[in-house]
Length: 314
Image 1 (tube, one colour):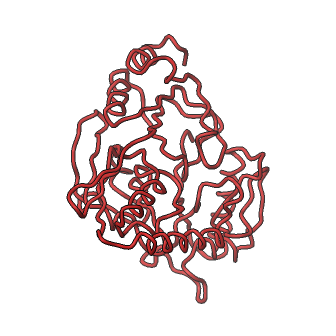
Image 2 (image 1 turned 30 degrees about the vertical axis):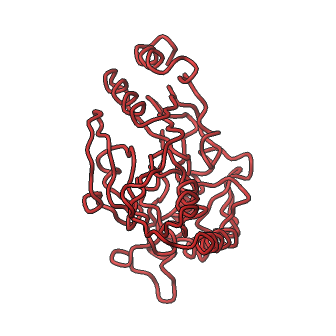
């Protein structure tokens, strides 16, 4: 795609040439640090700007992908077609005394700090969670058997055509690593979270430090990764052999793949549900290693692991 296409011209007219990239590198914006370029990339600073970008893309028949913090995604080496929107910035505010509203581009860590500093309990255990509010809602991020959707009161969404709707939590179709957004293609503009006022900020900070300490002990934070690759097996669907725990990481480990490598991609020796980029990995390396792990688990245990990450451009 070149700079003279109607889509690019429309975006430049709205956002200025300095905020619109053509054949723009995406790898620096992902936690895996791999992948090819976007046909077109625009950074938006407000929900209104995000909506305008969606409407411009729709008017020109271009597909749209929203890339938040870049975790839990694998971008193909060939890149992504259409428009990639990268929301930046955003605000956090109180709604009454028991709801906190956060724009989609706000990082989860930023939201956690905001609530802790104001003595608002509920989100402190999510300290260290990578990515943004929008991404966490999209995939219903989980931590220690809890889903972030359990804390959501409602969300403001934009439809594929740019129409707006406000959706209560019970209509978000939250499930394990799932939400309605994966089915509808809707985009989060903001989400409102339930909190409890009157907490001691020091106690909340201690809870946050404990969560961070667990992550540091159990996750390979020293190397680029995308977080957990696979969902844990579904007890209602997957029949596990006796003595095998319902853990994707444990299954990959017991299949003998901990430390296995494809090119520059390696299964973490700290946590076998993480694949890390040793510094030279391509998206193809990572994809091959994912498929190799899934096949080994299927062959040895009869369980087909489902991916938690989202592949873009494949």
